[in-house]
Length: 326
Ligand code: NDP
Image (cartoon, rainbow, N blue to C red):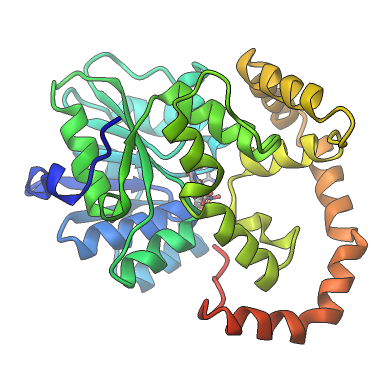
């Protein structure tokens, strides 16, 4: 399998183009700052609240989502997965024009058919294998984090090159881009979060990257040390949190294999996506209960007691300062 690095990607393809970020959270902020530092013209579409304030503080031009879509050539959709279909239908789809590119950091909504873009736009995937704060941190240090890149729909016949250029702009080609698909990224992402052992039918490179090669696991462990085992969950998408919390209690050493299989079946059959949709519609009763339980878990108190020790462990590891929550 070919991996793509800086010399395979042409940043100049983004010259004269505008990238309109829908969302300025974990991924949105980091990717927007990196792209801007790469010389790309960036605007942010976000309702007026703390995320918009953060974007303004960062010197970003903040407009409505509708205006960002109208003014942009590439539109990264970086709001929580479960909100994307509604925001897409109301604010993005009515403002699309042929030749634009919709970019996702997770294949979920496209793969499960919850968003169905028109045939005239490109649909690309640039999915960093890392929590958002690290996408920015590593870029500032001159590095990058690896990403899965894929194309769902190639209306312009340049979708792949656009995706690679975008990946270069956020620093992903510094670390390495792995060609993938919306299906592979979605299933691997959910499965590794929910069962930690994806292997069946996926490319070995993608599995290695997903399991440990990207270093995301190490970063997550660092955040566990620094922020807390459960409390670091805020750096992950809600889809990821819900998947982890609902699979967590089901794992035991005796029937690990069976449980992994069940977790994979739940993802592949679309049951997880349907269940999560029903959960959203009911106002997240299960999610709220499990999250509350996690936050009440005695582990949190133990971490508080151990805080000075954990902090010194973190510093000794040379991991720098704390990640700020988005
Ligand atoms: P966040 O939860 O950090 O997104 C927050 C952003 O979404 C804010 O700009 C917020 O603005 C906006 N938002 C929230 N509600 C709405 C709404 N109803 N309408 C419009 N905007 C809204 O998202 P993530 O960065 O965690 O996830 C974004 C994408 O990246 C997802 O597809 C996720 O799967 C993917 N991803 C995430 C990773 C991570 O590190 N978390 C890792 C890899 C992929 P406001 O509150 O002002 O509305």
